[in-house]
Image (cartoon, rainbow, N blue to C red):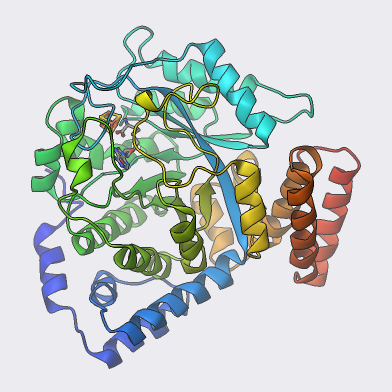
Length: 459
Ligand code: SAM
Ligand code: SF4
């Protein structure tokens, strides 16, 4: 039994949270200071129902987003290497007992082919994903797959420069091996922080052990992986409970390791083949509440990236950008081998956004965002506490702006359709012209190098 989640305290905070307008406004005013919020303040925000206050909540989240992230948006694609799994998570199509999907473990050649397709569409960052079972080579399969992904280069010299990894919890020793492969973020979602609900939906396999999962980031940090991502699968337990528990997990990590998570993911349950529960999530989250979740998290943990996947449709994804999402996936498939041939009968869950990377880029550039393919920080060792030391006084912007511009220019130069290139160049010019003189000068020099054929320019 770990002390990370204090169930009683969560229920007490939710029960006692003030609904008084003045109190809500006080918490929102504190949120604007970009210093984050306490558990009781998060509880106050989670109780907002009045439409005017909801609007103020959204405006505050937008303010925090503007101050810290501006209009940069990091882009990535998931890369599913295997859908084999020994667990029985009732919401997932990959669960061991599901006969309704076909199983596939990609060979290293097939992983290279998937990577090549992603690189040739312009991606620089992937999230490698797998079910929890690697029967033949064991954990080496995961390690070899990382080498394979990093080894692929296309005709423009493009390659995947950052691999984030979402695999089942590991031992400290395995995490050390993962770190040695130079991964970016290690990502793991608790799914639900509510123990009772957790045991009802994780029926068999190692994942049934709540404590082994909730302590995974402790082991990753002990192994030296200090960029970690957390998340909740919304739809399993009441969302207010989940975000307070998530906050407890974050405070615990900050307290113990001096740094909280690098990212938070907010997957919402989607239909999965062979999963009854996915058709009727026990604690379904409405679109309106989903937007509140994003806004509250943005204000509560201002310096932690928020990730939005293609589970959600284009319209809702668009709305979450203004509320603080800082990373999105694009052009995704959730079945192993899906970039080469899209076999829906192997997918983990249904997608809400089916657009190509080029279409997503054009859309977000039209909305005034700058897609960033930057991978500078972790390659220069700006991870964990070092990253936060730069982020909190606002210094990271001096790197992120120019890096976003140069990495976006690589995309426009080599991979964009003519229409996207036109929209993108306009967005780029506007982006740079709104920077400080010094940052604009740095950006122009970097972009110029890219336009003259140089790759991978970052500071
Ligand atoms: N198998 C590993 C695990 O469970 O940690 C890693 C990858 S798992 C394929 C990635 C995530 O997909 C899970 O953590 C879960 O949150 C999410 N997921 C599973 N079923 C889903 C569904 N029906 N809708 C949306 N997300 C789902
Ligand atoms: Fe396996 Fe992960 Fe799906 Fe659970 S969520 S069945 S562990 S792939």
